[in-house]
Length: 283
Image 1 (tube, rainbow, N blue to C red):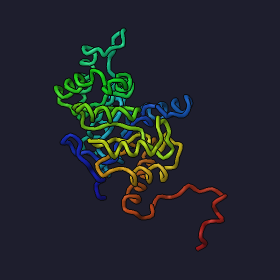
Image 2 (cartoon, one colour):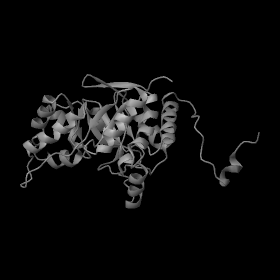
Image 3 (cartoon, rainbow, N blue to C red):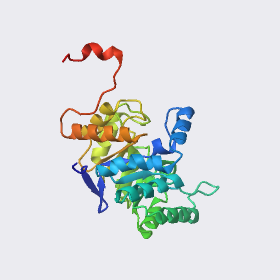
C-alpha cells in the first residue's frame, strides 16, 4: 500500500491524516453514556493499539491527544512494538494557572517536562489554555511567547490548539513562534464559532499548516461527507485529525480518504438495510 500523503511542520514530516484520540479516551461530544461506552470499550491499551496499528500500516504515524492519560502512551508503545514503526506524538495538555488567573510558569514547566518525558515531538497547549489567554483588545495571546520558548527548550515543536478562529490570526500578526494550529473545521459548522466559509478563508490565509479537527462533527455527519469536504477544501500542507473507535472504522476511513484524494469510487462495503434492496442492481 502506498504511504499516505505527508506534509512538513516545523521541519518535521507528518502525515496529512492524524490519529485522533477522543474515541479512545471517552470524549464523544454526544452523551455521557457514549463517553462511558468508549472508556469501557478501550479500557485496555491493547484495543487502542489495534486501531493504531491499522493507521501505521497505511503510513499514518502521528497521534494527537492528551498524553497525560497513561493509557494513551501505553497504547502507543504497544503499537510501536507490534509494527516496528515509530509514532510521532502530538501532545495537547492544559497548562497551569495561578489563583488570580494568570499563567503559572513554574507549574507549566512541570507539565512540559511530562510531555518531553514521553518524547512528544509537538506540543500544542489545549484550547482551554490558548483561548483563555486570547486578548481581543490587544490582538495577542498573553504569555504564550514565554510558553513557546519553554517548549523549544525541551526539544519540542510549539503550536496552538484553539476553538477560536482569531487565535491563528493573532499569532500570525504578532509573529508568535509556533509552527501549526489546531482549528475546528467541518461541513456542519459543529462547535465552530463563526460560519464555515469564514473559517475556510482563515485557514487559507494562515502562514503555517493547520490541523483540522472534528471533520465528521463528532459523528454527526457520514464519513464520506465529512472527509470529502475536508480533503477538497484544505490546502496541500494542511492536516485532518480523525477519530475512530475500531480497527475496521480506521480501515474504512483510510480507504475512503484515498478514494476521495484519487477521485475514484471507494471499495468499502456500505451498510445494508432492507430499505435499500430496491436500489441495488440485480445480477
